[in-house]
Length: 254
Figure: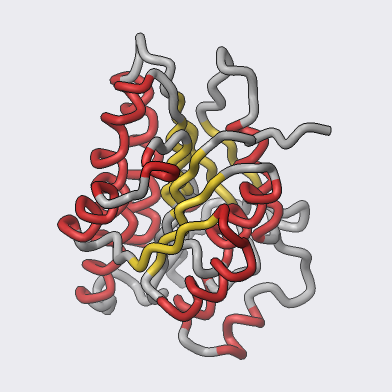
């Protein structure tokens, strides 16, 4: 069976763990060259050793516009023609209600989940349009559609990712460039540990159920980008079988 992504170049943000690492690994297995980016240099170096010469590690904080622009401009010839941009870098911080939440944490989520995503997109997208090929894949969340207590700014940033993706598709009409937003439910990565900053609490989130895995999301991304060129997968929302929807809560006075 031929490698589905042979002669394809991908740019994956947040590749040092979780979804990003699994996506990078899957792409390399499918024959792609991958620019793997992230803030943690040691993890990037380890990933690059594992993936071999098809991976180019670039230490990058997506909150830094100048760093993104410089990194993309400096890509070597073999990696400069990006065919697939996977905007994966993102995080959730805290579960406090809005009136007690940390404004610093809110700003970090906005800067990473929104500003970083649009900066990477705006930097790489013109080349896709010029070359007449490309696919932007944004990693969103079911939190974009289904609010929950403590979700406040995190959910709002993912709603932004959803709407930005839809508007990108509208702007790109008449070009061959495709846009997909993938919105997972509960997935067992470092997500909850980063959010809760407590290993026990993070493990308890998934106790007694089978969450999605990073490999599930990598498989979904690979499927989307390998559809025939005339097919654009707009939105995929996926959840574990053991996760569902609840009734609207009602606060009742005694």
